[in-house]
Length: 137
Image (cartoon, rainbow, N blue to C red; front, side):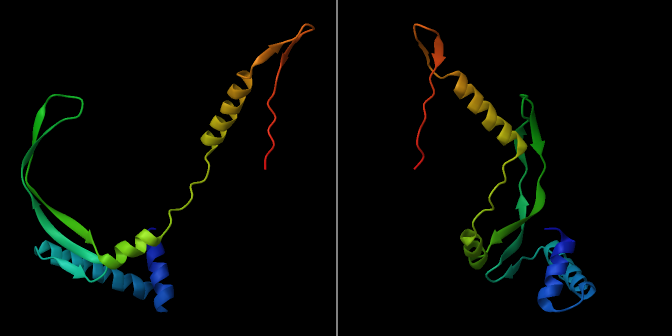
């Protein structure tokens, strides 16, 4: 969901104009940002906590190379999910993934390969392929 979609949903649920919802959201985001810039944390009970953390300097190896590089110390933001949000998300079933074109093509190729692998039974008159017919219950 993008910010514009979120604003539309909030405006509909709060019965306010999109402009008012956008203004409130922008002020809320700016306020959270200001609190974090000051080095403080902010907690929304049941939703989660935004916290400022200090990451120390460390040494890492570049992927595919043997070179070691120092990563400088930095300040970062951490979000810890609250209990109510965590429980609400865990109850939601993941969306079913639509079959892509590639998956359909692979399925057809597998069927063709399986057909080609069917056992060949030789008869005196000619060579025949046997097909296994199964009943679906």
